[in-house]
Amino acid sequence: MDVIIEPSWKEVLGSEFDKPYFAGLAAELHREKARGITIYPPGKLIFNAFALTPFDQVRVVILGQDPYHNPGQAEGLSFSVPQGVPLPPSLKNIYKEIEDDLGLDLSGKDGSLRGWAAQGVFLLNAILTVRASAAASHSRLGWQTFTDAVIKTISDRRRGVVFLLWGNFARSKKALIDTSRHYVLEAAHPSPLAGGAFFGCRHFSKTNQILINNGSTPIDWSK
Image (cartoon, rainbow, N blue to C red; front, side):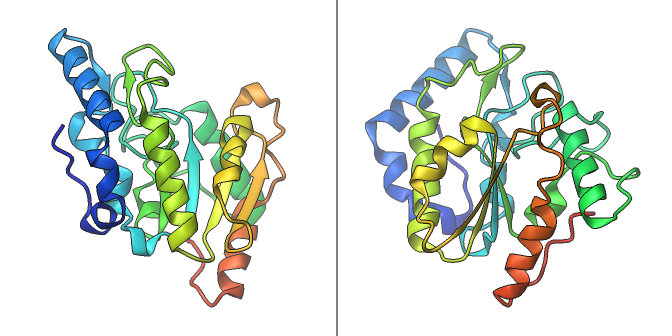
């Protein structure tokens, strides 16, 4: 797999791409593609989160599990869908919490979170690919070895990043984060399956207050 990734990430993660697990992962993706299996997101978008948020600009991390597995939804950013695609249920709940938390009206906002990524919100899925119509189908491919290294690299080489961990899967990654250097906010998953437990977490105002306290510009969550 010819990895096209933003130079600052290539610099800090370079050794990961040379490890045997990554070669095996790439080989399996090629095998599946050769067999005619549809994989999401499209190849050029697999590393979209890295392309849109350079390493030295990461201020907030929102960790998802794996990409959307229906046609046209996945664009390589956790929870995000391209412009014009109907909002998935979890993203609807995220927008509702932002509205309640910050008093914003997001009724006209599309589902693309590229505006967040441009402000330093790193929208990372722990698993970067998925087979069409088969949730978590690439969960054992080796992606988590890679993305665990990504999280650990942010923890080790940056300071003052706000990690938003929603749901048990994301919260399990807290062990990779040095909480003496960074901020971790935990909540239930925004999925309707969580029964509304996500609501009231106020992670968006809390994140902005942390950024302001550290002399950084708050995120405009309406973008």
